[in-house]
Image (tube, rainbow, N blue to C red):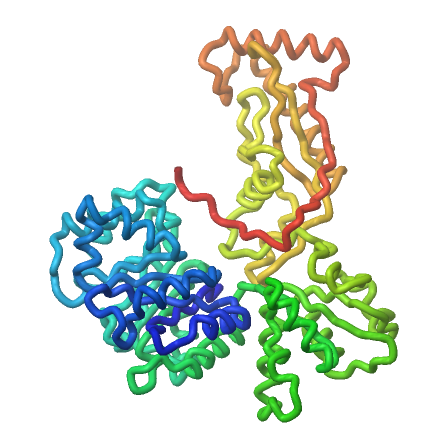
Length: 535
């Protein structure tokens, strides 16, 4: 479903870290994978420690350390050197272990010890999966705690780093029903990506719509040097792939004379997604067709578009960019007066008007709760559980009435959620109605959240349903039937019914059900519904 990262490997001392940072600003998919090979530091593909320090000081969003050779693994096995290496590696987003890739230098026990040590240290691991490693990887994953599986990723690289494309790309791996984050490498580069990316996607989503990443090293080199033009070509191809869900940075649309404003904002720490601001001088743009395509891709990948218009200005290209943003589902924030556009779009859900650039950069989106769906949802119950946890209104369980478990699915907002199998995103309602209940018959009363509904009418209908079921349970108890009740003894059932009868006599609406409206005011743009893993 989603190409989440493009990992580009092999930048070295000949490459400016600041140039990589600039590309990260333009392409949120970019992950810079740095080879850590102590025996070859300072040679092509293997940057020096000084270069790595400068690179890490930039604090880029996606980085990886690819561990190579034997020395670094022996340091990780040795008690007196392991912690220093772990401290260094913890500064990267992910760690790839290219251990025993070319020859078996380490025993299976040593490989497992290294895997476990890094996982226990809280690092996110990438395990290179090929015919020489799959057995030990399988054993490691089988013994891993369920909650740690989200920090284990597999890189399918049958070529073991030699850059050979496989005949077939493998499907995703799972542990039981829990999918692992998987990547694909081998012979990829700008010349073949248009052909290979659809094949990889087909394999990655063969059984389920899941995120994946791609990795390449030789494909972005020329004469054994890291080729920035090839790297950007790959990122451009990947970014125009319409099914990437990653958004990042602010796209600024304005007359070119304002480019210095956006450059200054970028220098102050604002992440920008508009590369045209560096090409706004006379004669700096040589290929307008390429520029147009690039701008459209950047708009689609940006988190918002800020449209800037000063009095007396007549916008042309910026108007087209604003329209492209709305078509791509990117929120637009207008600063200044542009009556022709305001008149047309002011009722659009993604259109906002602000008094200043500062407001446009920081203002929340009008409909802030947007669900970017990474996994296909098998039931609306999954959505309810995730939404309840996210809003902090309590965990969601199957609705219960004093031990009576109802198997009936809660069908709320199902059109909003399940339709994402054909639409990547679905807007949630502005508020939900939470049904709560008070449980009687225990040492103290307990109030808990039952379920959430999109309308008050639906929530009240649920309350009526619960009351009917409780009365049904009371009738069963009266008849001596305990089927469906999970209390350990009849004494507790009778205690429950006594309390229930008291509440009915007091006129307190049965077991104390109530409906509360909860506005969905969340100061983030989106969150990802992740399938709940076992444990």
